[in-house]
Length: 183
Image (cartoon, rainbow, N blue to C red; front, side):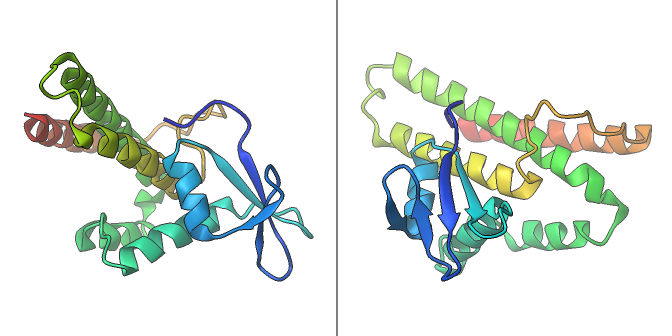
């Protein structure tokens, strides 16, 4: 899981080079992905304007991994994301994604915890893989929600009751699928 410490500040120079302010050296997108996999939050800002570019770079990391054949996002999910930008569902998508990833992380944590309690499974390399996957999911979730997932900012406007019911049904179906996968 991402730590609650201050995010690692990465500055983007006019040359588009990325500079790690903690280690005083230049980094690549793959380096940033590694920081995130290791559980570190990052913030990428433009040196000149001060604009926060984190979202843009996280999406670029996801796109690069997807283009290299490391596909995590099925075509139908990508299609639905594109559609969500052009529909009235746009406001519900971030909350839905956040809730879905929260349930997935919780299910995953329980699975890893159960592995740790079973001495036969405790040394299984899959446990470390799940930890890395969890960090990647958190980064993806932040990218998709603009960093607002789990924030303490103002609460979103309530959705109409029928939209909430539909979302609750979808979440329940996802939770059932995750439970089956964990068995």
